[in-house]
Length: 126
Image (cartoon, rainbow, N blue to C red; front, side, top):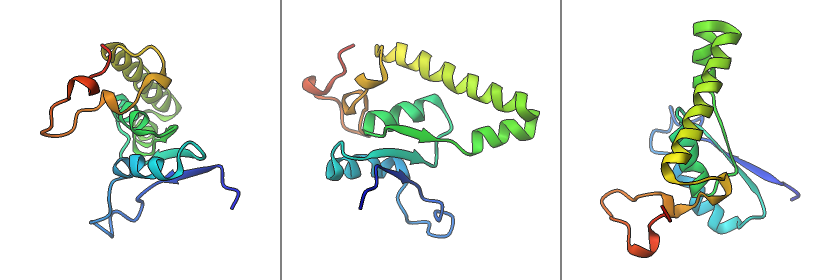
């Protein structure tokens, strides 16, 4: 149909409480579409680690809502700037802790599954 990207969101999540979180949809969608579409995760992004998890699962970008709105409510433009600085600092710090030097290095190997230990082959290179 000519689309070049998809934004994964669950803005109806408050009314449809059994809908999956957007982050849980990234990998299955990426598996189906391959690299033919940009995937943007919208919803639930509150911290730098959330961004890194979404990127490791196959998202190309993340959209934030509440963090910048909280910053705006608390401090106007300066509050939004502070939120964005904090988010960037978290992403940069957490990439260092992971041993990743580029966003493009992130993949599923950087993610642990609940209750399932990494196999030797799945461990990140750090």
